Amino acid sequence: MASRSWIALIWLPLAAPVRADDPAAAFRLSASLGPEYDSNARREMRAREVVQDALLRGSIASDLALQLGDHRADASLTAGAKVFGRERSENTVAAMVATGYRWQPLTGLLVGADFNARGRRILDGDRSYESALLDALVSYGGLGPLAIEARLGPRLFNYEPDATYSDVGAGGGLTARLRLTRSEQLALGYQIDGRYFPQARVLIDFSAATGEPVYGPGRRADVQHSGSLQLVSARDLFLSGSYLLLYNQSSNLGETFVRHRLQAVVGLQLPLDLFASATAALQITRYPGGLALSQRLLLEDSDESQNKLVLTLQRPLTAQLALEWRLGFFGNELSDSNIAFARATAYLGITYRPP
Image 1 (tube, rainbow, N blue to C red):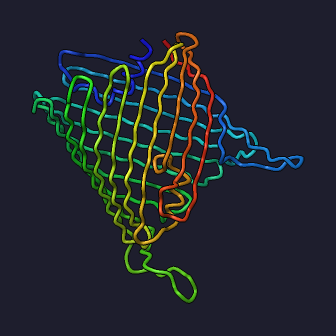
Image 2: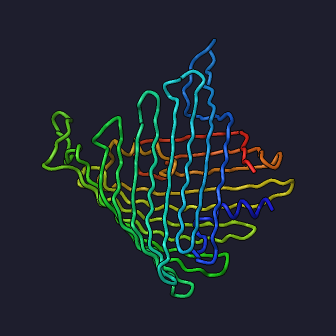
Image 3: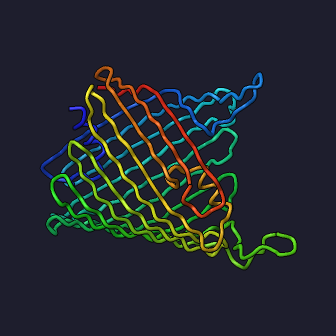
């Protein structure tokens, strides 16, 4: 039963549409706490030895789903904190909220909205940010195994240390989902986002004499196109594979890039009541116009923008407690930037899920 529950958790975003004959309410809560090793944590010299700063990581996650007739509402909250032993200025709190509403006025037709927000606060204020998006959507699934979804809405990103990296904009996209079997699904998507940076002048060059930046008229504006292909199989062995092609066209020098990203997720039940999962991502990024500072910020702050390999093992100790071990590696080896980035993490903690 353990494998079924974990697979259901991963499979939840692909759940069936709202049904009038299936009223339901569900709530899940979990909390985790444990020490973590981070190769990029601060170090100091003690008695001629390099001592790595200690790190404690904790998180809490909750999901709520309500369904009444042809209406369904979902909400989730994930919050976490990192507390360092000595470098308290690096203490971090982060949170992510996701809410959604769906209404089925006609058979096969869904209309609704999604709101997502996330943020991070570091004690010294460095690298703190907030982001949010609100999408209206319509989905039609009356084409047999094929469902089509369209969405559109505003976006917001606020980077507190430097307002020139804050932006506002709007985006939308189309996604086609083909259900191959009861457990397999293929999804093809296209997304376009426009971003305007009200505090950023347009960088066009650097002075050959002084090296100082040369700015043009107006403010920076980016248009980002992305196409994605994903295949998911949710059986006793969970498998997911995806390909993302992203093109960011910027009016700013050095901010235009093309990215190819492959990602795979595997989850399975092992002997001795162990559940294992692995996530691997490989990406190639090319900057035809050079490289700017924002790429350095991206590498420092976003695991999603890097090559990665994350291995996780969980084993239940009781009906409510589980032991979790996680090992992660991150880097940007296949980028043509001249900024090197590498990070390794190891976590061992206890997860609690109330009955």
